[in-house]
Length: 192
Image 1 (cartoon, rainbow, N blue to C red):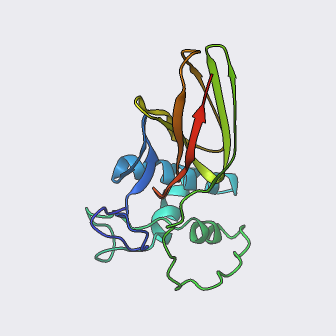
Image 2 (cartoon, rainbow, N blue to C red):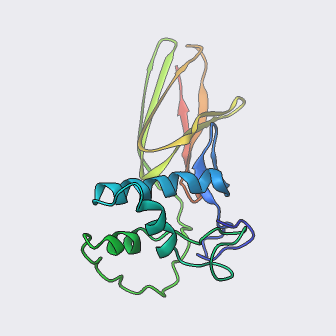
Image 3 (cartoon, rainbow, N blue to C red):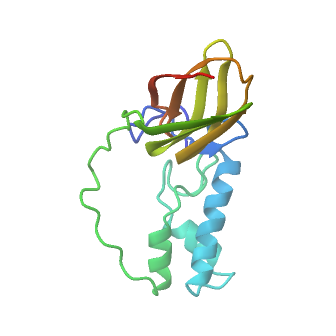
């Protein structure tokens, strides 16, 4: 991808979305291209191509992105797994796309939080909820800040906390999807 452009119209530069230790980040370059090329190579080998044929199949079927042929900016271009498979002759033709030229609208819909429940037992507080799409599991406690996991996207969420049994806790659930849309729940109170 090229971070200076937004060719697919999703509101982000055209890097590859990659999970890091604490979040999702867009990256580009050989570190992001390598796993994709390796996957296409494995696909071609599984379809009967020999190891000697794979490099030529990948480079000869890539979609040229810049000047004709290899260049330092995009190599041979964008890999095309379907064209590479068809070049070895064993792959069935893919079904045509509905409309290849349509513009895909970016996801701007926040996750919806529902099914909120909880259990308080002595110094333990467990809170659970669901979201209508994969999202982060975070809770904002008044006076304490955010807790939870912002890097793993789930639909069924559960977080456990050690609490002071005599304290009242006010909190709000936060769900952020892969596109960065944030949904928040109503405010909740857990009392002794």
